[in-house]
Amino acid sequence: GAVYIGGSHWGFTGLPWIVKLSAATGAVDMSWQPPSLAYISALAVDRHGDVYVSNGDVYKLSGANGAQLRHWPVDGYVDAIAFAADGSWYAGGSFTTFDGQPRGNLARVRDDALDAGWKPSADAVVRAIAVDACGSVSIGGNFLSVNGQLRGRMARLSAATGDLQSNWKPIADSEVLTLTTDAECAVYAGGVFRTVDGLARSRAARLSAGAGTVDPAWN
Image (cartoon, rainbow, N blue to C red; front, side, top):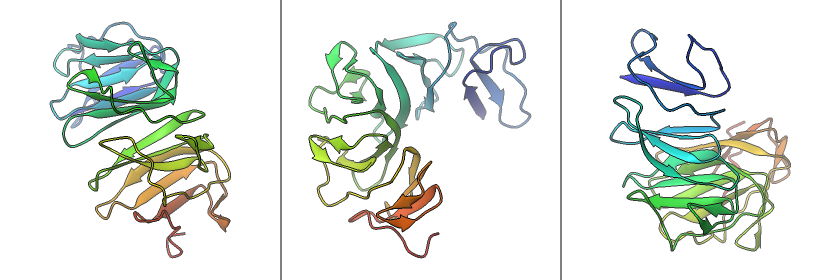
């Protein structure tokens, strides 16, 4: 097994920006030689072991040797990459084009090609994405509308179509930075917020799958 780390750790063991470590020992895999990339803002690994990173643009790197396999140009930056079970993946950040096509801070890629039909739009940066087993994609960030509808820094979309889930609309009072889901498709959010839907929550909250209701027992 392997662990990948990326960021602004220039000079880490003589290797800049992104490295591959042994999961067992933490030793740097010196045979893994990715291209020279600047600061890494997002990183994810697909089911085949290949690595997706962003330093603005998104790059697909071989998990075996680090070679660049694919490149998607972005006119801003990507902060989040998340995979679905079918191998498609979602990107969020601050951009108006992705792979040369107009997009509003969100994009979906299937079989290495931008999904032409999946194009929801957030009005500000998307910092976090979580894909669940119920067919939904949850997003978090600093946006206040998605697809032209008011949202309070979190929203839930159809994984297939990008349509907004109309009844899922919790409101965080400040930026959401990370999201994950559980087997019940509930959403866990973390960030710099202090309230969600007016309830005191110190930077972490659990939201129901159905309506985004804050879990009163999870505090």
